[in-house]
Length: 482
Ligand code: NAD
Image 1 (cartoon, rainbow, N blue to C red):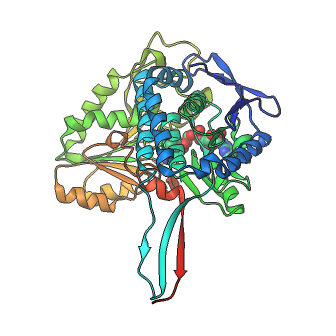
Image 2 (image 1 turned 135 degrees about the vertical axis):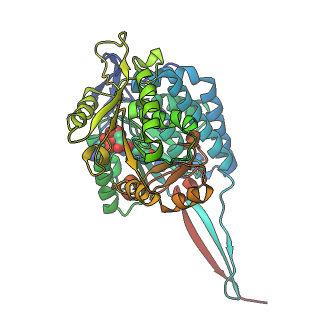
Image 3 (image 1 turned 180 degrees about the vertical axis):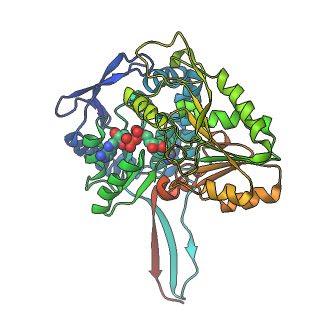
């Protein structure tokens, strides 16, 4: 892959940012420079939106749904031929261990195949109405869709949001994160190679407060998909409100994993730990609160402790359990949280940083906390690092209260063999996804995903995303009766 990084991808071409400015991209495993990237600003966003509008009036806008689908499927197939290259880019850029980066590349391919197959299967309905009328609905693209993406899962998030938007015939403008955007830029080349017409996808890298703010407030944008923090999501929603533009917000979480006395704890154990430390805990759906019923609390804590003590952190290319955090800033945030351990709270277990981990990397040891008060900041705030809290509970009602006791509601895991309890919990928990006797359902690209409360609103993934990335038009034709 001959990657161009210091330009924006607009109207099918790599072009210099209008102000000619660049940003430094660093490898979080080493702290060393990887390359320069374009620092796009409002001028580049103007060009990208204009290119998208032109594409909607041209070949892309006129293309039958099944042909759009074919191109998306081809993008998926091309991604599958470049898994190793994409994974290496992501490992260097995000600090994600290679195995996980490969899984993300495969997921991006799956999104393209899934939405490629779905492109011509979303349709309207006919509606029985008064005599003399024929009434039907049409599913139409919004027009230009803006996609603002974070650094933690670039390939998966591009797959689920840009894939669904293109399937419905929108033209996309993508603003990847300034901390990690190499696979987004690689995606532009792959899409171009697969035959995506010029302007259907445009990519402007740059700072959030410059390119991101320009995209979210642009009058030419008809729909916004934002994945990131609550703080920035609030700004994006406010900017969208000024233009009365629909917005999907995929924000953070403090998701519970609830383990009852009757659970198969050996089956649960790898999920319980992995859901908290995968990607260094920098995962929106991290299962960062582990709620354990008192009868198995000591036994499970001992098993988790043993698992934590095996965890090894190091260079993403070494492909250990955990890589570095994305930046020194993120490391400061995590260590800031850890400095607030107080009262009965204590460190129950720690993982290790490999002695071979490069000195300039942003490494922290994974940490398991116990004894934390459920209202304490450590049990309430998204830490976005490899830190989990274990909380003891007695009754089902108490578990539900604790699970629902944060401002978030992204996902939840429930471990129990009791079928009736599984159903009760699935209903009682306030979250966008509930997993029973698993966590994450293997990423499940077919499964609608999104939050309630401060975890956001709107759904991506699955067929549901296709409704979000389209607009329903009702046609009521009066023709009279014979
Ligand atoms: P962030 O909000 O700082 O940045 C996300 C994106 O927004 C980046 O591309 C950034 O450049 C852009 N941005 C920053 N300021 C902006 C502004 N003023 N206007 C417009 N865009 C702006 O988030 P982050 O730290 O990169 O990501 C971590 C957060 O994302 C966590 O809270 C995590 O839970 C959340 N997240 C959620 C999901 C989900 O699906 N729910 C998935 C991944 C990450």
